[in-house]
Each structure stands twice: as structure tokens, then as C-alpha cells.
Image (cartoon, rainbow, N blue to C red; front, side):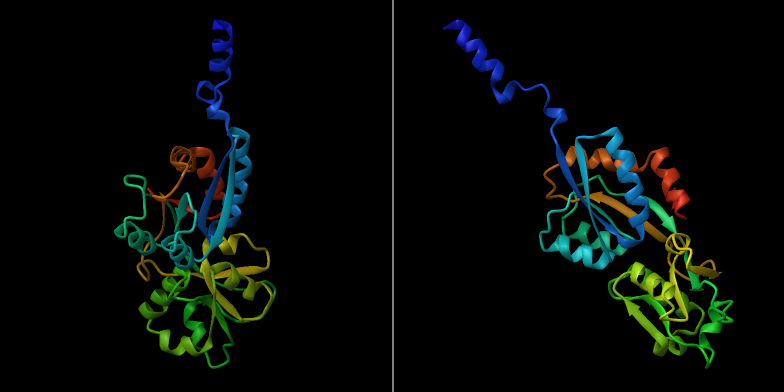
Length: 253
């Protein structure tokens, strides 16, 4: 009888010492501009924590914000703008003391590689011969908001607006330029560097737009809080920083 009790206790789930090795699926909603870097980090992270599966949901920060507000099962949110994260924080949808600024980026003007457009600066976007210009939809895409700020600061927004082709996220804006469907585009430096089909012709002047910050936080409804916090810590470490830097990002600090 005593031996039977020992066997029952030993086999009981509550006595399992391997719980740390149990498989965990983390869902990360991240700004579309992070796609290349995060995919590379997934491979690196899997080697270090093979029991953690990272599932990505890329899109415009505004769309991802709304999904979280509507109860989407998300563990970690990485936005390309602080206002999206601010909104979620004010609604109490983020886990306290998990938010931090992860990365910075720049806004650049690009044209199709090998196509003679004669565009060398933002001011050239006002020319009468200027065709279509791709940028993110300002209402939901942070890259579009920053682009609008740049054009406003340079006092050319009203001249450029009729030529604008608004994209659902920054990657779509990049694709419009890559395929030659537009003559120019306004995107992040990291996106421009990811493509051999576009050429950077100008960087937005200093002070012409808000600082492009990427805040990260654990979503309050996460069922994997410790694993989510561990991932955020990993993304702040040197190995991840090296990957982000190679993509054109800068460290938030």
C-alpha cells in the first residue's frame, strides 16, 4: 500500500520537475517594419529556448492596436509609434512595468533602383512632372504619420497630397516602389535597406518629424507572462541588438 502511494505521488502532474521545458507558444504583434529582423531573431531564439515557439502577427501599428483592444490573444506588442502604446496603456491593456522603448528608426525618401526619376530631395516631390508617391495611411500607419509630419514641416504637404498613394502598412509602400508602380516612396530606413530594388535619395531633415520610437510591452491578458518578459529581455541583449542594427535600426537609448 505504501509503495503504491509513492508511485502515485511520483507520477502526479504536480510533482513534474520538467515544467520549465513545457512548450509555450508566444504570439507577438509587431509593426510590419520589424519583419526581417524579427524573423532572423526567431531562429536565434529557438536555438536558445527550443521549448518557446514564436508566432508573429505583422501589420500596421494602428491595426494591431485595434486587434488588442478587441481581445486578440497577444502576448507581446511592439509598436512603431508611442501613441498606439499610450492608448493601450491608458485603457489598462498592458501589464504594468513591462513597457520600454526598444528601437529607433529614420524616415527616408526612396525611388525605384535603376529608374531615372531625377528625384534627389523631398522638394522634388512638388514638381509638376512628379508621378505617384507611396506612403503609409497616416491614420493607422506610423510611417505615414511621420511622412505627413515631414511634408508639413517642409511646407509641401498640400502639393504632395494629390499624388499620394496610401498603403495599409510600410511594407506595402515599399513594394509599390520596388515594382515601379510609383515614382517615389517615404518609408523607414530599415525597410529601404532590406530591398535591393530601391534607392535612398534623401533622409528626412532632423527635427522634421517626431522621433521614430518602437516601444514594447507585455499585453495584460497574456497567459505566458514570464515567457513574454523573457523575450523582451532577450530583445534588449547584444545579440538581438546586432541583428536590429544590421537592419538599419538604432538602439532606443
